[in-house]
Length: 445
Image 1 (tube, rainbow, N blue to C red):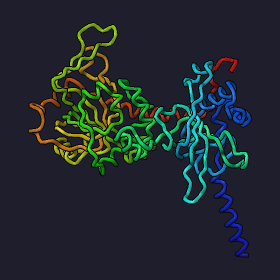
Image 2 (cartoon, rainbow, N blue to C red):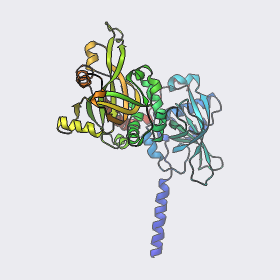
Image 3 (cartoon, rainbow, N blue to C red):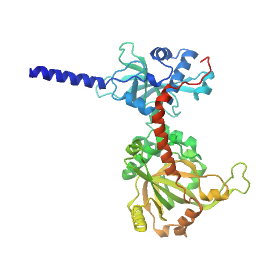
């Protein structure tokens, strides 16, 4: 009797375990698509099937990635439309053009099909799978690693339980030979370089929810890199980043600045807390040396007056996961507690990664009618204090002058953090509606 009970328990456990390794269908997230329509879309043989495949990718790009990933967890077998996670190295790439009549509505003009070799345990025969995806960076090459979550759109003829082709809305990219030291360091620490490449397209704009895909992983990676990295960074000045922001995107840089204010920024979203390993990070407003160069910013259209001039120094924004001991001690000594905002003037040298030029409101620009301030945003890995005699003359006063004249009372990153979290919450609440919404396309589509 005991043997029978044991066998029944074992059988029950096996059945429970088997149920956890089967992927869930994601068809309910692809409004307008069913298994027959998915099956007809691949392979792309003509304009009609290519258009259907492009519309499927559009649906995937609009789908909630968190929900899709939940459906794809621990999937070992699949049917058409099931959620899948793919991770492997690129073997070949081909590009397909979206039919001209669809480009305006789908908002992309081409997509790619990649042959990738999946990561397999040692000794097992390599497994090749195709991925269909849009928004692939131009620099992706053979042997680069890619990863993504999508849906199965073609099964193997020899084994109807094995997936041959997966459609992915957003494909993460981890290059084998990154174009810079900074990209290599970030990629080695799990940062999706394709998200980093997109960041530079938003230079001189406010921080947006789309920036979070790179911001938080970079902040997490920087804290790890700062604890171990010894590779020398490139020496940079604010003027370099103002002149050529695209060139320096994601670069591993060093810079001398003078701190103005330190703000503790709370992070309440559990997903972001997991990414950075904390419920907060720090924003440091600082000023960087311009040398003998004068920076002039033209007034917004319709505004009358001379350009806004910056001489000697220019605002540089820093974010860091944790403050160095010397700066935390200064705040403790000055404020006498765990202050949220502290006015601290210290000459420092930072090692970190350039995120992008970002714009934000500032008292200095408001008083002059110059629109929003814009400047470099650095994600910092290491901070060291400089002796006072290495700072420029009068550096101890620059911070307080800058605080009153340039960035008084503006905590734009904190506002963006809360905005992003609210946006994430709203997206999660509305994802069921979004998954069912109909794309407004011409009737002939």
